[in-house]
Length: 405
Ligand code: FAD
Image (cartoon, rainbow, N blue to C red; front, top):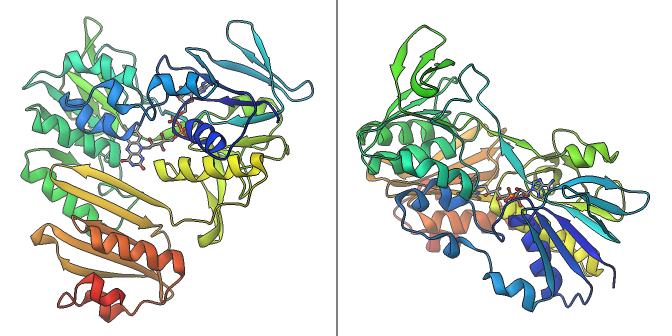
């Protein structure tokens, strides 16, 4: 069997390893991971981990001993610095080299740094890794004043967690509403109201201009309109940049993500890429793009492993995602981009409802708030390409189970 080397020991890289061993792959597997931790889940980092209710061990995708007992070589706290495609060798940051027959690039993404003066001050954070959380935690004292930049999922989840911990939270967002990039005005407004109700201030159409320091620590933030707000902590949540430099330097196609096909294969037949670092075909929506989610990392990890094993390609699933804020569980199936109609099922005032997105009469996506049956059924419909009657979906006198039958 071919020797497989995986760059990046995160969600996607780990999935390749799990699927290869599950599929009976007998060959050598090496994982190179820049972080000191064995592969772990990131979603809790902006949720329960901030409360301190989950230990680092519990976040691990497999116990550390699993790797050795499955003959997987974990090279942690080691960064790949060069891919030599001609000689099929990866160079590591300690000068060592490792040869491969199949290579998987699963280097993920890094947070975009706040593009303003003062972003290097003490008290400015991102939230991507356990290490980021460890640096942030000592600053999280009740009544500390936090400014979160960006009202996306990570920004709002962090706002909720820190507010519950008793911190003063201000979220600033340059767009005209929260979650503008990912959901409809209706869902944005619902979440904005929930945050206000909990005492989080959200200022939209507001651009950060400068982080003002005193003694090299954060003291305030200044907005583009001249407003200044005192702050002890600033957290950036303005999106991620895929780690694609290694691939681009090796001459692989990069277009806002490492370009792969529906088997997670790059233009080089022996080299695969999966997870946040890729630009992939989104088969069901007839386009390509970057999907930043656990589900995507797992799906592409399975695709790469199947291709390496020479087994059939796994069936395409419907993209899905979730977000937890306060006692609200938002579950999203499908991609709502390009919808021309939203059908509401239930009443947002009940804090339990779902928005169904249609485009040209076809069900594209659902945002379900505290409504797991709506999520589950809609996901199944989207996967099967079922034609869904809009009146039926809005009819709350019938349960989702009854409607689905
Ligand atoms: P990662 O998990 O980032 O793994 C990539 C790894 O590669 C990293 O460890 C990195 O250090 C390493 N690496 C990079 N370059 C090199 C190199 N040159 N050499 C060696 N190693 C390298 N998704 C959801 O679906 N639901 C959620 O609720 C959700 N919440 C999230 C909350 C937070 C705070 C964050 C940060 C993410 C969240 N996500 C969520 C997104 C999800 O975690 C990511 O989409 C997923 O982790 C992507 O997996 P990946 O393997 O592509 O990248």
